[in-house]
Image (cartoon, rainbow, N blue to C red):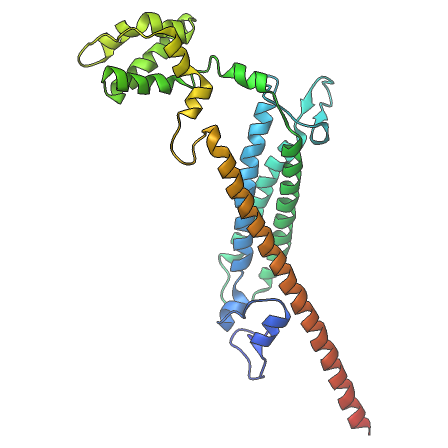
Amino acid sequence: MGAAALAGTSVGVDRSRVALLLGFGAPITNALDAVSSRDFVVEAICCAELVMLDLSRLSEELVLWSSYEFGLVELADDYAASSSIMPQKKNPVAAEIVRAKCGSVLGRLVSVSSIIKALPYSYNLDLQETTAHLWSALDDTVGSVTVMSGMLATTKFNLRAISESMKSDYSTATSLANYLVKVEGISFRESHAVVGELVKISIEEGVPFEETVVERMPDVMSRLTKTGKRAKSIRRDTLGELLDPGRFLAAIVTPGGSNPSFIPAELASRTEARRRNRAAVSDLRASLASSENLLREAVVSAAGATEGRKREVKS
C-alpha cells in the first residue's frame, strides 16, 4: 500500500499507519522492493525446511530403531499400522510420512525459488503462484511437528535391548585407546592402531573383545608401536570398567557431551527457551489482535465519514 505499481504514488497514503493497522512492524522502505520481493516467502519456507530436515532425520532413526532387527523402540499403535500383507508386521507409518513430508516442503522451496529466479523487478503475476506453496509448506511443517510430538511422547524404549546392543558393538573401545595413551605413554595415533587391530582380531576370530585384549594386546603393541614395547598386563576388572558404557559416558567432561549428569541442565535450558518462544508468540498474537481492533475501528470511522459526506451532498 503506497508503493503503487512500483515507484510510489502521488496520493498521500500514510504507509506507516497502514502497516500498523495490518499488524506489521513497519512498511518495506523501498517501493520497488515492496512490490516485487518475495523474500519473506523464501525465508519462511527455508525455516520450515530446516525444521523438517531435523524431523526427517529423527523419523529415520525411529523407523530404523523400531525394526525387528534393532528392536530398540516401540511406537504407539496410534502412530503405526499393520502391513497390508503381513499381519505380524507393525509399520512406523507416521514416521515414514513425516520423513516424506520433508521432501514435499523442500519441493515447495525449490518451486518458489524457481518462480522468482528469472523475474524482472516490479510485480509479475507469476508471484501469486508462490502463495499456495507457502501455505502448503507451513501446513506440512505444523502437522509434522504435531505428529512427531505425540509420537515421541508415546514411544517406549526397550532398555534391555539397548543395553544388550552395547555389549558387542565396540562403542567404548575409545576408552581403551585413551587408557593406553595415559598408562603406556604411546601416542594416540599408535594407540588408535593397536585398539583397531584388537577389534579386527576380535571380529575375525569371533572372540569377545575383553578376552582378545587380555591375551593379544602385548603382542599387538609390540608390532604396531615405534618402540616395539609390550603392554603391561591389564586386569579384567580394570578392563571391564574401561569398557562399561555407563562409566564411558560418565567420563565425558566437555559441555554438550552425553554425560547423563549434563542432561538436567540441558533440559532446563531448552525448557526455558521454549517458554521464551511461547511468550514471544503470545505477544505477537496480542499485537495482531490489537492491530485488528484498530483496523476495525478505522473501517467503521471511514464508513461513518463516507456516510456523512453522502448526506451532505444530498442536502
